Image 1 (cartoon, rainbow, N blue to C red):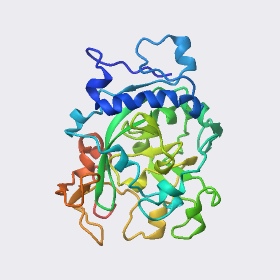
Image 2 (image 1 turned 135 degrees about the vertical axis):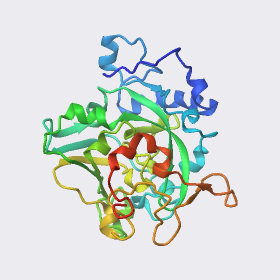
Image 3 (image 1 turned 60 degrees about the horizontal axis):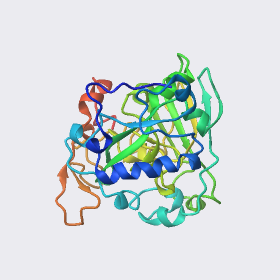
Length: 324
């Protein structure tokens, strides 16, 4: 297990996140048994090697907080978990809440395939358990020009990749969502190609910001938000953050992506948040924060969703208007 040391004085969770999120974390701990991920501790600082080997723990990040983002408030939890795109459960924003209510996300396996030294079908627990989870506050920007600020709980994707040991031929990482029309009734309609697929370049997948996510707001992921495991790539438009992952493939070739397949003119492979590149049907210069009412003032969209310092070097020399 990787133990992340917290520099300086130990910062209390209640000082980093809102009181509501701090209290909600208790619910996430209680749900650990339901997840089948072992006992969850509030922090791994000072954990013994024996405990670290058996527990999947999480702590609040000191590098990904409201303060470090320059944000004042988290998005309302009810808004963030009820206003959502998840076409597997319907095309309306509130369809996933209703249609995913009876979805049973456990037990769950993830198939690891392709150019990797440790392929296989992993139980979710076996895939994630060796790593320490952390809670991160991240901006999330939809291509439809709405956004939110969410505390996610997960593991940096790069840590999992290192353990799986991709070969030198692995240049990209491809992801695939569960395809099961009986459990995901939206898949009975051919509104987009199924199953939903996405991909990242290897350096993007290895970037510390990329998170394999198991929870939000201190609790395990709701069904409508991609239970039991999803990706969060905060500098890209939200559709890149694929939900309910069942397959991860390491490949030499750029993998297909669902929205790029459906409409390449409007949705490129990279899909980086860029206020200077409009969607063909609307501006991307400003965004609406969900939960603040339809008449709330739209705010300026930041390049790379405000993560320019951490990710811009990966795209040095690239024409981001063509490689959108």
